Length: 191
Image (cartoon, rainbow, N blue to C red; front, side, top):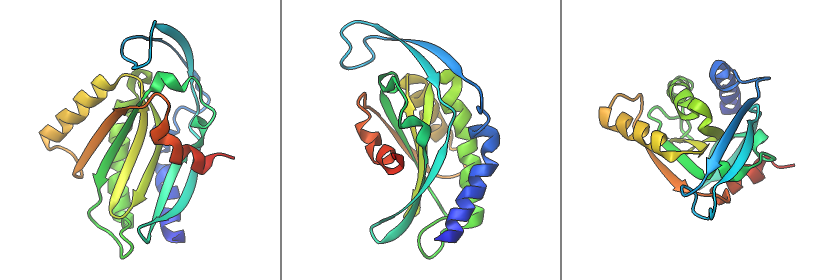
């Protein structure tokens, strides 16, 4: 397990130019939330500071197979969570796997490059917070919290239709104002 953890750490460092580029930058965004959110009676105004990403690696087992999650711990205390009330899960099929169904180092690099291509598009204009990545049983899941699902849905649908992606993938985006779908991730890195 130590080898895959080291590889994930190296991959995390290599993604630094994308995911960690926002160090020391506070992004202030004013959001109006109205009819787009399920429980909103009146539009409410929120001031949001996008937090600097901070990652914790979590090892786990699922179906007797090892897994590794890299979770953005900066979102544990983040508020107002309601602004990013949509949960995006992108499931990427890894192709070159070891005997424990984890990506080989070369496959890890391919997955990281694909993630690096998706990240700036998902996060464009402060529309998404990166919650984490989970690798287990031949899959890499990328999880984001989303403000406006329309541009994300449109982009990902277009990418699937174009067939110009490094690995087969699918995605699901669901309303989740209370962050229930993020609870495992948040609890895994909570003090």
